[in-house]
Length: 150
Image (cartoon, rainbow, N blue to C red; front, side, top):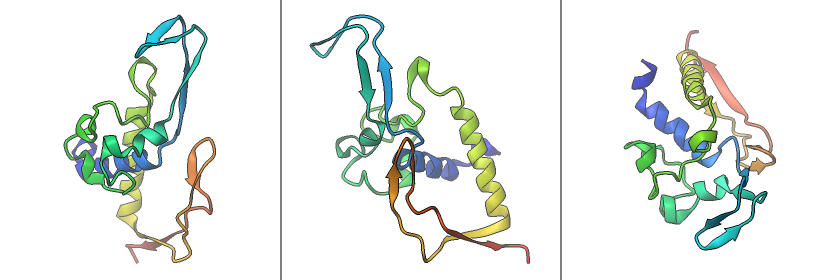
């Protein structure tokens, strides 16, 4: 059942694109190498600005700053102009080993909440993402939960 929740998947993926758990990843080179004609010595720390990549209009289109889950209707690798533009869990051999568990857990939690409550933003909510180590709401996330089973 959890595998057949395409709209929920799209919603979670777009949330991760705009408000991912990590905004930047760093790797240290283990040997001398060359990247696009630039020599990079062993021990150099390379940084990948995930937040910037996830909002790049050349990769995601002019609406890159907008929340549009339908970007992911054809899957992660076709959501942007480059198949590896989506990096909330990194990529390759050092990708997060918990990414599948995270997606399942998020779907279960959302399903449990939405089975029991209607959810809306509080009128007091101010959208102000804050980038410390992870992106989080500067003033918290005030929501109104109303029981569906009165």
